Image (tube, rainbow, N blue to C red; front, side, top):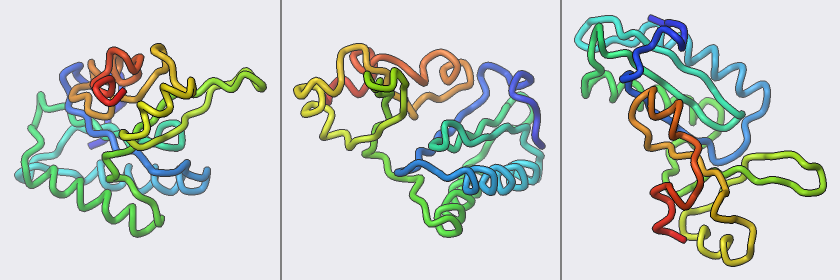
Length: 166
């Protein structure tokens, strides 16, 4: 069952899947529809899960489950992974690449921020070249709860787990 974001408990579980490339407007809209259909029917041990999901920044598929009413079980999590694998095949995208880091890049010429990606093993080189700085914001896709998502999903690279790669 889909619920509004604000209705989710702060302890709600979160899963974040990052696309290896920027999604088109058409892909985002189609994925949002598929995601809503999946979440509306997502169950754990035949109990309806209270869920929310969206595609953010044309890059991240975010799913949340409020476990106050029914907990996400191993089988239900497997269902969500299979759903994401279906999205990958259907839209010819990659959502499971865990060696990729997304970060905010400020373009001095346009004075605009955009989301860039690199491999984890490239962080040190980018830092050395001045492409990243200590205050560069990275996306921590390993946050576990809605509360962490709200407060810690985006954080400076030097206070993130990513720092061990710089």
